[in-house]
Amino acid sequence: MEPDACAVVENGEMRKFRGDTSCTSSTKGYPMTASTTFIAKPGGSVSGRLRVPGDKSISHRSIMLGSLGNGITRVSGFLDGDDCLATLRAFRAMGVEIEGPDNGALTIHGVGMQGLQAPHGPLDLGNSGTSMRLMAGLMAGQRFDTVLTGDASLSQRPMRRVTIPLGQMGAKIESAEGGTPPLKISGGAKLKGVAYEMPVASAQVKSSVLLAGLYASGETCVTEPAPTRDHTERMLAGAGYDLRRDGSKVCLTGGGSLQAMTIDVPADISSAAFFMVAASITPGADLWLEHVGINPTRTGIIDILRLMGAKIELVNEREVGGEPVADIHVGAAALRGIDIPESLVPLAIDEFPVLFVAAAVASGQTRLTGAEELRVKESDRIQVMADGLVACGIDAAPTHDGIVIQGGQGFQAATVDSHGDHRIAMAFAVAALRAVGDIVIRDCDNVNTSFPGFVGSCQRIGMNIEMV
Image (cartoon, rainbow, N blue to C red):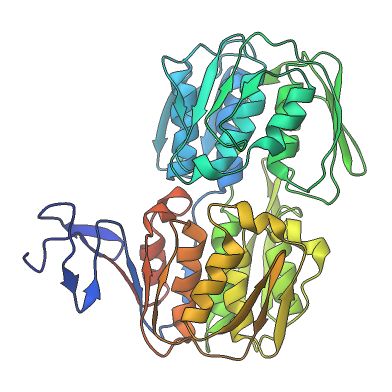
């Protein structure tokens, strides 16, 4: 096979592709497969200004609530990633006219609470667990049958956490053996309000039950054991729906309507997290991250890094469309290991892969507990990160609900498998900043689910990374 028979990407752009898709040649001595591989090289700098893509959680919900609203909802800053596009395609399949995305702009012609139409086939949600769980609640209240499917990874993820409370509301949902997708949802169910106390803190479960509650008779209340992201509640209120909050409990009464909105999606703090850690661990770093959402239910990453000694400053704090945003200034710091407070775990649940990288660089030991949720994400993030860290020469010991990492170590050259998990892949790209050799990261296709253009963003601030 000719040396350039595989895809080659430079500066985040596809340069050429020739030959068959089973490409197994090598470039510069690195193995290549048909899936995307990152080659993250040691050193590099982290400086300048960067605006990461729009918040994934808010982008999903803008499609869902905009589609059910009365009138035209306009969205800017929409995340044009695979997960959010799966949600967009699903609502188009149910008869919603959606213009865009065009440079992050969407125009959604809402059909009202009862205006969705039966799709012609199953709704394929790709790799998006958020889409699956939230839409299970919405579809439970429709008049027509729906089938929610996903890719191989999503088809292994647990859905009983939403199907159980939805069943208590009267929803008729069948799942595969083991409670996994596909979900077959029967239309015409008479939903009734429920008072549901969540056994585990989960914004997706809370949102699914509240969205089903829009179609239920009476009052639906959800009580959470610890604070989780509240984008659904904020956006429902922004659409004119009456919600009542009482401490850890949020309630709504079914039968209302949603109004059209103007939504400005802030930059995703989960995507910004990779660069917060990158700047914190890189000598001489000086980085500005622009227009980042700092919803207090999402800022665990900032709180944890500050406890570790990070130099993080929030500048120009403001509110945009009901969501707090700020510019974030991060410089290099001498990080130290900590016992991560369990109260912060739900507020940083998606950011732990890159926090593990920070822990490996920090002096001393870092211990995480109370994070069982990480084992049922796009991968078992505790085990997969531990395996990758050990491959890089880091002392990392997984536990049933967390990990213990001995810090103060440099990363060795290694090849790691992301297991198709976008956050694993991006975390090890950051690790190369403190490595003594190349870190080759396999199976990185799903980075596009949350951060299209990730490699180009890394290169713009001085990181040494290639994509093949």
